[in-house]
Length: 133
Image 1 (cartoon, helix red, strand yellow):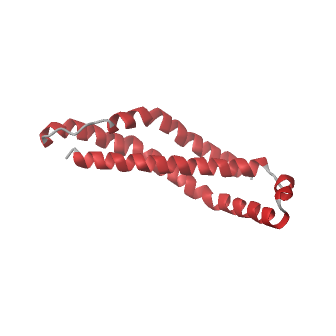
Image 2: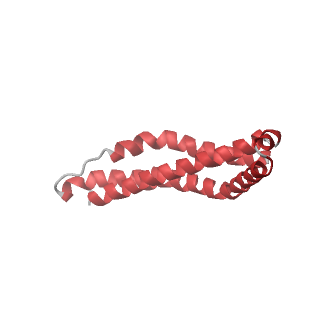
Image 3: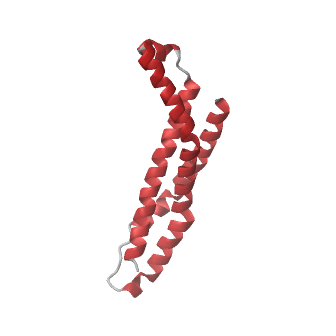
């Protein structure tokens, strides 16, 4: 289990680092206001396209992949915890508590949250790109 935690934490850390490095560029691109004439949006569309395909989409894909890779084990662990709780009550959770399993589930949840947020940003960039021409 600790190997799984190490792998998921490492991959999540990579996605989080890329997110933190590129978020300023992504949010700046989202501030772009389309101009009335399509011809005036050529440079802005090129910039938004570069941010979309070069930064936002790679982080979104990576965060989603990390989530999907580790989600089945996290669900399995959550089911086991729920089963312990329903069979023995609160005391079973304390007696069966495992910090490594809990951390693994937490990292998986964080990667899922990052993935959802990144896909929202990707969809916003796609919408902006369309409005730019």
